[in-house]
Image (cartoon, rainbow, N blue to C red; front, side):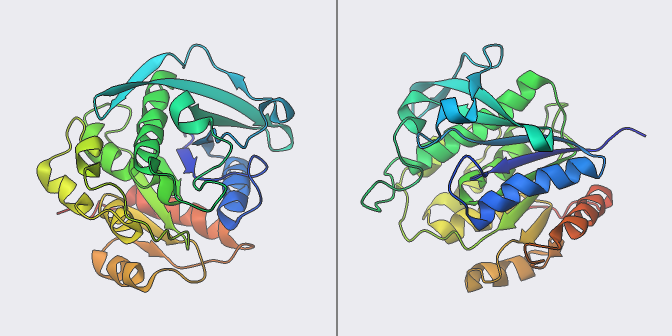
Length: 275
């Protein structure tokens, strides 16, 4: 029987960023799923805080070189890779000089939310999917971790749904307590718009705050995992009413078996139609 393929897309992965709950899951979940016999690929942003020499990142020339157009501007897509030897696991990094060279992740040194985080998230989501296309690797499941990955479900279900690599792909979103208080630019929907994304789809992004970003991600996902002990109450209520399969919070020790079983359940279930 052919191995099932799981694509992990994470906002944070240890040891490339300081330790966080998302970073720990990003590090150990793919390894555990691989050890259970599934094939994996793992992606994260190449934040400027990552020491490339210490972590032995190097550019993958055959995957780099594409330009992504966001808000009528061309942005070169650079792909780097590193290995976590003890886990026999490679990590792919999405990089770009405009978006990921600064020496900070999502907030500046004064704790201010970066003004272009909307474009950075768009670039990251599209960059991941374009790189997977170049790899010619068809994921059965895409599992997204952190709000920075929240545009992946929309693009998979709308922009890439006719691509044979993605037309049967199921998407799972883990929801965490990584809320941000800021609102993104009012014109974010114009920037998000891409092949297959309709005006109706963009309605979710009229007021783009943390809650609305995640609601849209839930809408275009096939399953939801509660990733933190406490998450936003409005989101919890929304998820409950969504009709999507939901896996409750599992803690940070015993989640592996439950996540693996949840993937298997999602793969055999008929999708809940997004309205």
